[in-house]
Amino acid sequence: MSVTTSAAPDRNRRSRRREALRGWSYAAPTALFVLFVFVVPLGLVLQMSGSDWPLLGGNQGWNFPENFADAASHRLFWDSIWFTLKYTVITTVLLLGLGLGLALLVQESTRWKSVLRTAFLVPSALGLASASLLFYVLYSPYAGPFADLMQAWGFTFLGTPDGALWSTVFLIVWRFAGFYMLLMLVGLQGIPDDVYEAARIDGASRWQTFRDITLPLLRPTFALTTVLCVTGSLLAFEQFYILTKGGPDNSTMTIVQLIYNVAFQGQNDLGVAGALSVIVLLALIVINVVQLRVLRRGEES
Image (tube, rainbow, N blue to C red):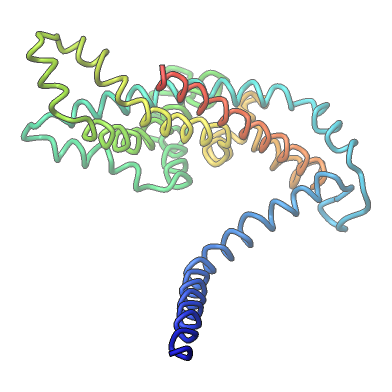
C-alpha cells in the first residue's frame, strides 16, 4: 500500500517534467529565432552606438557620448526627422481613411463585391521593393509611359521636393490600401448585426449609425492599424531609396535612409549609425506607447 502511494507522486512529477520538456521543445525554435534575429542584432547595435566603430577596422574602443552628440549634430538629422514625421502623418491619414472607405464599399452585398475585394487586395501581394521599381519606371522621364507628356509640359514626377513626396505617397497608398481595407473589413464584420438592427428600429440615419456605432466599435481596429501604419511610415526606406535616393537636394531624406548613408556612404561610421538607430528605437517605443494609451483612454471613455 505504501509503495503504491509513493509511486503516484513520482509518476505525476515525471508527467509534469515530460510536459514541461515538450513545451520547451515547442518554444525553442521560436526562442532561437528571436534570439539570433532580434536580441543579438540589438545587442550589437547597442555596442556600436557606444563605440568608435568605423565600417572597416572593427571596434576601436568606447566612445559613448560622442556618437550620440555627432548623431544629433548631423546636418541632416533634424531635416530628416521633420520629413519623416510629415510623411508619416500624410500616409497614416490617407491609408486609414481610404482603407475604411474601401472596407465600407466592399462590405455591402453586391454582385461586384468579390471582384472589388480582389482588385483592391492584389497590390498588397507585390513586394514593396518590386512596387517601387515598377513606379520608378512609370515615373521615368525617358522610358515611362508619361515620358512624352512630361517632356511636352516640362515637369517630372520626382524632380521637385513636393513632386517626389507625393509621388512616393501615391505608391504607398496604392500598395497598402488593400491591406488596410482588409483589416478594417475584419473589424466591421466583428460588429454584431443586432446593434445595427436596433439603430434602424430607433430611426437612426446612416450617418448617425456610422458616427455613433461603427466608429466607436472600430476603435480596437483603429488602434492596430494606426500602430502598424505609423511604425511602417517612420521606418520608411525602400521606396525613397529606389525612387528618390533622398533627393532632390536631400528633401526626401528619411531618418532610416540617413542611418544607411552614415553607415555605408560618406562617413562609413557604424558607431554614429548605431546611435541614430538607438534614437529611432527609443522614439518608436515612446510613440507607440503614447498611441496605445490615447486609444485605450478613448475606448474606456
